[in-house]
Image 1 (cartoon, helix red, strand yellow):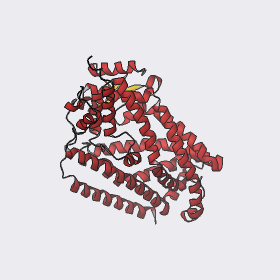
Image 2: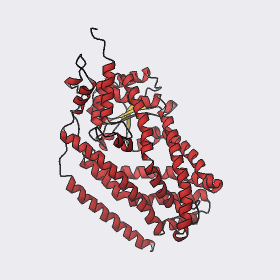
Image 3: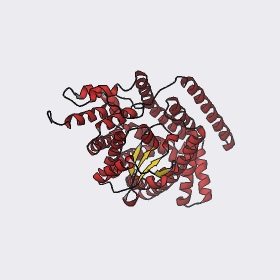
Image 4: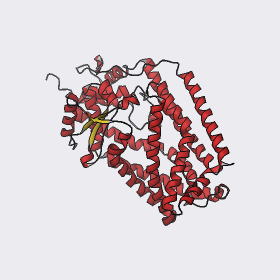
Length: 444
């Protein structure tokens, strides 16, 4: 198949897929949705402290803040995400197979080598070409999952042009970063033979640490404007919380994420003089001061408990296990199919689609372990945030806001398989337990 014929068929496929997804979205989106809880703090009567207070009744009272329609919508959205994970895997693997069997990967690799015979130049060129092709092949599913579906469930009001701009920026940054790390990994493959995956694991850890350091200052502002939070009660409360918990910064910023999503979010990141506290405008505009304190207490917990460093270490070990399995599987796959696909050995960059497809399957099977790692750190930050902010009502209320798009009360197996954060039920219950244990003794 010539490159021009393949390009025409690819374009026709993309247009057909996008139109089909738009039609499907239009058929679903006819149902009006009321998603958000009203602004401000709500404290149900059953959650008020007193002699008749019980954790179970207080928890159920908070869960009852969601209407049946909101509860059903949250469950549908979150459970649909389970299937999207599978479709994303199948689509990505299929895209890699297309690039292999059509010979496009081989031709892109040959093109990069015509530019330079040095692998330090040709390899990153090929990687950028490969990721660009993969981005285009995966675009239809991305439009459905990240644009149409988000609008369907009232989680975004962003225009398609704005969304596409963000996707192109993210894809460009990801391609450049991936070109760097994968070029070094291919150097390890060439020089260390079958032990390449050990070196790749170490490089992955260094890379994750580096991105963790530069992201708050250099990467996140590419998508949003970060501005100093004006003086006022919110800034005073956040700085007081930071000083009390030894977060070494006086930089408190807000960013305009409401143009992309209706979700609330915040983060504490950076190192040394780059450390800053940031919250999106949804958190500022839709919540109360107790909720802001509770959310920022949680985020400061990640910082104070060194999750910014511990989590990449554990995730790198998990990635290392996946790379070890990939090393065995890739060699066997190349021995079986390499000749027919025009691939030489594991050091051949043209085999990257085969490696990506194989790694995607392996890591998909390891997803519950990845979720367990992240969820354990989130639970630690939850406990820290409650003790730091002393805002159980604020934490329960913010958990309910998040539960408008996260299934509120999953089963144990479901939570283990699919949740990378504690469920809304677990978070509200933890807040009510904290409230019960911190009530003043009777008669005082």
